[in-house]
Length: 463
Image 1: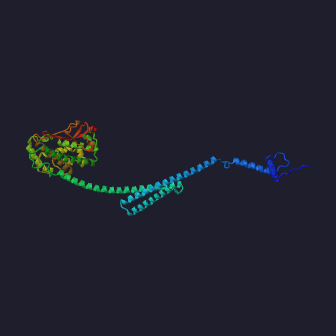
Image 2 (image 1 turned 90 degrees about the vertical axis):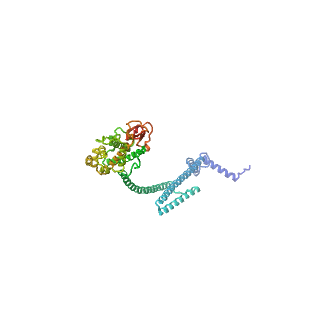
Image 3 (image 1 turned 90 degrees about the horizontal axis):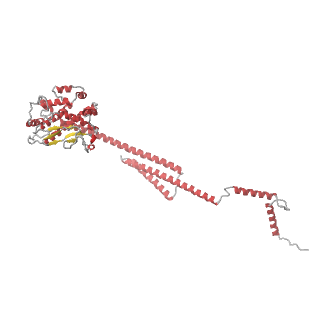
């Protein structure tokens, strides 16, 4: 009988495991052993777990997805760092605004001096400088341990607005203080101006109403008379004439007269480049009336043609006598002297009845002057002094042989520096180009071969 070799126990065990696993994988394969229900359940659970593993994205993430997740974390961290830096910059600007407000407060406390204000502002400056130093250290050390960025930005904006408001308040206080200083200065200057105006009026009144100031020295003889003496007396006349015109304009303004309309009535075709120039039209009106008849030795006074022949010596003696007398003295000492008739006639022409009634409320002064009596009012005294000086110039003009002759410039005549002088001599009245004379303000004079320029107003349309 053949001997049968028995298998080893190790091989037998491996064979059993192989058969069992084969039955688990292929349960329908015929076998002499029946299927184990426990093994089938285990296989099904394994299959289900495998399906769940494949369907879950978190369990099936690839390597690229893990890289993207790392980039996202880096971006979030960069955004946080950026927000922290922006918050730091906002806090920096807020601190600078506070520093600016503290410096403005320090300046304000110095003028006027305020010791407590200076100390308070100095402490605020030191505190804000400390905050700036702290922010610098945080930035350099990269320790941006600030509150959340949105909170820091909001607080910084509030701080900056409060600092700006404080700066504006300080600036407003400084401006108010300066305004008070200016108001005090204005009051002081106004008082000085009033005192100077009173003094000037007093001096001007003495200058224009007294005969103390001689236009020509008494030691000047007829043979020594020259053109310079005539020009000096002419300026003496013009000062009084312009003073009277200014007083006349002030009276018109006080009575609500329309100066523009009055100037238009005198020179209807004139165009004034400056509203202040309209006074020249009134000055021209008074000048034309006062110098009318100047070239005749009697001023064309009625009943004086045969009484006073033309003799230079007589006119020069009259000039020397009258220059030391006031108008009232002339009227009192010699009421029949031609000057009284001249003064009365010119006054009735210069002063229109409507103007006089507006100034004085009635025509009483006009009636008094017409009767040969001269009032002592301030207005008539100014006029009489102007008339006396025109009369003196007339006497001096006929002291020359041949006598000095007055002339006027025709309207629209081309400007000539030889015969004309512009009355408007301000910076805005520079004479350029081809200009014409709108009207004559003061007549010119010819003394032998010497010409004294006529004062004219130039047309602004060609200036």
